[in-house]
Image 1 (spheres, helix red, strand yellow):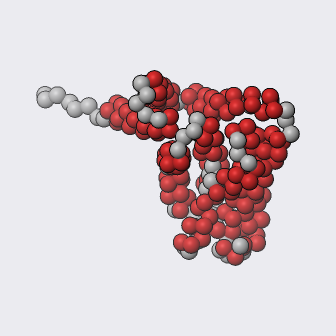
Image 2: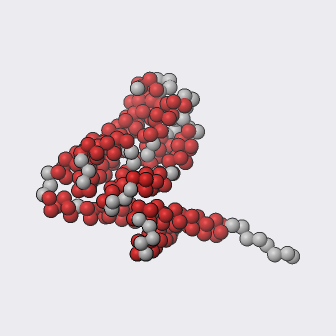
Image 3: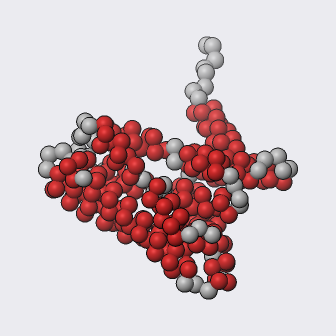
Length: 242
């Protein structure tokens, strides 16, 4: 696999591994928690590991657990995951400008491993990004996420049944922990969360939509409304005739 790199593959791969160690350490507790919560949600260790292998997206996987616990359909889960991860199109486009390798096949394969963290590390690198570097960066991060997800499930299985059942509350605490820092940085996020919560509450109380579709539609409507308000606010005001 190291042949994917341009120039000096082994050297670039090692640099990627070194850069990815900090990400791997940061992923460990989050992945352990995911594995533990997956166990309490009812997923087997095989299903937990497979989700981490095929999805490799923390926020999307946590949301999937929440939707699964609510009995949401597969299509709604896939659509919600797509909406949550749509920012990856922008990240990939930005990183493509810095990517030295001209072979599209390499970029297609390695784009699977682009996360918020791997993108951030690669984007701030002073040198050009190579496929060898990205392979090293992604492989150590990916391994940490998948292995720790499985370990988390094993740890969860060893806990008393009553404690396993009570751990479902931790899933909502995790979402609060993800949301609050963003809300502190931007009032826009506060409005987005509030509007989405209002729409979801209306859809749920009126039984207009199923739980999954209520979440999907509430997310889309709130995003559209907030962006429309933002565009109106930033629209240049016309000057009167003199």
